[in-house]
Length: 263
Image (cartoon, rainbow, N blue to C red):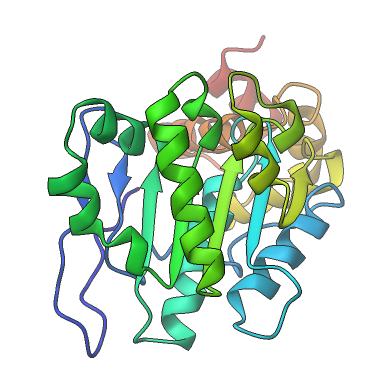
């Protein structure tokens, strides 16, 4: 689900902007309320990253002004990134917060749209700048140079900058050393694949969210079948929910196998 942001108190309404790939620029926070800290199931492999995200969103005194969250696909990096924006907006309604997918950042610069679009986003004047999938900047020299200057300007102004990427900053390929050195300046926090205990909690929570009771023996079975990423887990629960609704039956091992095509 994608929730369109409502206007925050004390600020004029600005629409979210959507690029050709369907990723949204979020110019107005709070946004997408499903992306909150309370709605993030913490595992041992994500505990440090969640704590770092909460701390940088708190507005308290920290020895760093940037945070780099890294990990594999569908492990919750975007969730935490937008949760930071939501928490900052809720705590400090007057702060300007910008969420930008990196592919959109690169596209605008490559297409010569910087003057019209990036200035409209007011990145240089942002209190909190959230850049998703920064590794997509690999090999794009103009975008890397622009990001380098943005990083310097925002850190000098003691603003918050948060990045996500699939690799740690020192492992980014196709990135210039002057940029990776900046990405390493702040706090870095990795998110590891979800463990069994957390996967079970996520299955239970997603089930409860749609009014579905999933027995323990079904969860134990799913742990041997479901990939350890949120998208796969959510798809699994959605298919079981649909099968339960269509058959008008409670969830059982037989029903779950039928829903997933596992016999």
